[in-house]
Structures are given as structure tokens and as C-alpha cells.
Length: 277
Length: 277
Image (cartoon, rainbow over all chains, first blue to last red):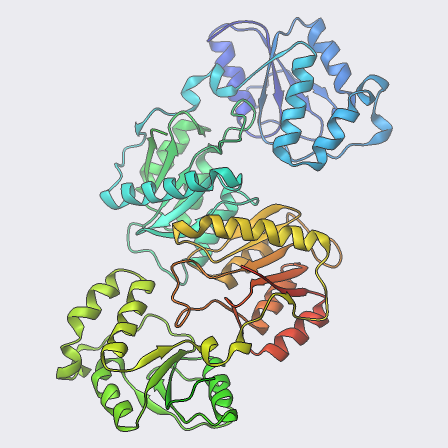
């Protein structure tokens, strides 16, 4: 892990604290900037500095004063609303660049935000660059090995996701016995798995489950700020949907709360493995 | 419309009676063979001859005796179970051909069934071949014209469906403001639209609806026996999902109960139009 004082730009969920613990463990100095309206899970009570998006320029000043050299975005953020009354003049000067991106979709908005941090002199790094163990290398991750049918279903799902790549639509699919039950779209992975659960009332899974969730990044995703992730909730949902396996792209999908995730998968008899891209 | 005594092989729903009325109107003689376990909508009380799939060879004899030259499959059929005790010896001789197809998926099974009818000397024609007005030519079908955003959303959905073609997965997609909300998979169109309805609790549609359902046949579909269809239920579901338009491939998607379908679309303010493939 490289050094250099690091700011964790925090949304919600468990990833910011995970990064904080990881940086702390190897002695890299860091601060946490918490986006207003969100709260990271913070059982260890790391100190956080709140900031509002309408005063982004002031955050840049503050991070500079603290000697921050690089930033890492961590945690879930919905597309924020902007309150015009709160905008300070220097942040207002950034708006001509941000507003068109707001119209153009999540990827474009993220690219614009990254650009603003970079122009302010910060390196933008990915969570998985800081802590490589957040992703998995190819192989079985849990205690349950995929069966031949799981491997075949993951290959079919991978083919579908790869084929969808140029469309910039999905980063996941569910396939059971070669049949495509669902393709991930805007509503996301959780909604897709829940769709399979609901559909399974008409296409019941056999004892022990059947079908594989496959996740991989889209070719257009900037993995520094928008890497797909699975976690304990993914396992619980997959179990409810009667799936027998979860396959992720090696090096391309984060496992949040890895120990708990693997424990749940093992207990559910769900194979969890990573495949080489 | 060509002539020649025609057998309507009927599953459930409104299409068999629609075909009967259409053939009757132009003086083409026909019989209706109703698959056991299903009941076509039959408000006009057309006479039907029941048959069981286990005695398919006897149906062939009966249709021959009646002078039938061609058959048309009409109405919804789930993959039937076969009761071995009911199989007559001559139908048993057909099983070596049917059983592998049962393992290989719906398309393969349909192809095998078509092949059996053709080998027995019957021409297999499509419902839309008999009654071209079941499909639509390019243009606005209802009273509501698509807005520019609807046309753009339909184009994006069409691009997605066309791109999916080689995967043999979906025959429909829902796009709103350029964002793909859903792609049709095994559970079908109704399940896909209901997914959008459920997701819309998080991505609400504006007043008047937003987003387009696009449907088109897969390149692998045999349109004689497996043409996609929309109908009154599609409109009701699309309205519940907050959609503003439904676009279908011209000549490639049947409109069941067209008058009622158009009436519901008009009342809901939903644009219904066909686009050239």
C-alpha cells in the first residue's frame, strides 16, 4: 500500500470504516470527510469532518490545509440535490462544469466530480487500490465449491454481461440451468435478485437452490469510484431467491464485510467464487 | 387470405376465437381442436373438438378425415405434462422425436411439434399470415402520438433488444429518459413490466408517465407459432408502471383484442405505435 495522507470521502454503509481501519493498520495518515445527509457505519467512532456538496471548494481548501494528497471515495451516495442558497461563490464557479454532467447520467457525473478533485490537486485512488484484499483473485472464496451446473450457469451469465457491455446497461445477470432469469438494469442488483425471488413462485428452484448470480464491472465504469460490490445482503437475497451460487469477476468486484459475507454463503450452502475476466 | 380447410389448434385466451371469427368472415372452412386442460375464450360458442397430446396421432387421423389441409396454433399453452398411461401406440412412435426436444427448451419443442404436423401432411401457418391485421404496420396505432422523448426511448430500447438478439434472451425492454429500467428474460413481459412498477417506488415517473415498453420478436423465433403479443393486460400493466408509450415491431407483434387494447391505451394517454424493423 502506498503512503501519503489520504481523505476518505464518505457516503453511507460499511466501506468508509473498513478503509479507515485498513489505512490505520498500515500507518497511513487519513481524515474522513462525511458528505452531509449521509452517515457511514462507524462502530469504532473514527472522527469525521462533515462537508456539504454546495461548498465543495471549501472542502478542497480544508483538505489542502490538512496536507491531504489523495482522496478515495467510499460508500453509497444517491445523486444529491443541490440547495442553491447554500452555494459559496467559489463552488458556484465550478457549477458550469457540474450541471451538464447532472443531466448526462451517473457515470458522467462521477467523472466530473473526479475531475474537480484532480484539478484541485488531489490524486483520486480506488478503495481496492488501497486495500487489494477488498476484491478476490480467481478461485473459490467460500467453503462451498460450485457444481458443474453452477460453473456452466456462471459462464452463460458472464457471456450475457460481457455482450451487454457496449450497451452500458447491466453489470450482472442471473442464469439457472442455462436460462436467463434476469439482467441487471438501473434499479440495481438487489432489485434484480428480488425479481428472481418473485419469479421463482412460478419457476421454483429445487432443493439446495439453482442458478447463479454473476457480477462484473461494465467496461465504462471507473473502478476507482464505482466498483461493483457484494456483501452480506447479497447472500441473504440470493438465498431467498433460491440461488446456488454467486460468481464475481476477479479483481473487479468488492466484497464488503468479507468474513460475514463468506460465513453467510457457507451457512446457506451457496458457492461463492471469482472468475478471471 | 388463402383458402383451404383450416384447423385451429387452440390453447387458452382470446386468439383462437379471434381467428375463428376471421376465417368465418371470409368463408374459409375451419375446425377448432382444443388441447385438453386448456379452454379458449369462446363467447360466440364455436364448436370445439377436444384432443390430448398423448394421442396426437389420433388427432392427425381426425383432421385428415375432416379434410383439413393446414393448421394454425393459437392461444397460450404452458409446457404440457405427458401422462404415459394415456399414450396410444402410434403416438408412442413419435416420442423418440419429442422427448429430446422437451429437454432442449421451448423453441426446440415448438420446432419438433411443427415438424410432426408437417410430416403428417399439414401446412403450418401463422395466425398473422391468416389475419394480417393482427399485427400493425409502421405508424401510430392509437389516438396518442409518441412524444420526442418516447421515440428516443423506443429507439434506445430497440437497440438493446436488437443487440440482445444473438443471446436468445429477451424480446422486450423498458427505457425511460434513455435509461434502461428492464430487459425481458424468461419470466416474460408481464413480469418485466411489474418489475418496473415496483422499481418506480424508488424512481417515480412524472405526471403523465415516462418510459417506453418496446417489443419485437427474437431472431430465433418461429413467428408462425410463437409471435410476441400485446393486449389489454399489457396496457393496464404499462399504466400501473407509469409508462408513457408502447412501441412494437411492425409486422412482428400481434395485438390481441385490438379495439379494446387501443381504447385502453387512448384512455390512459399511452402512445401505442409500430416501428419498422
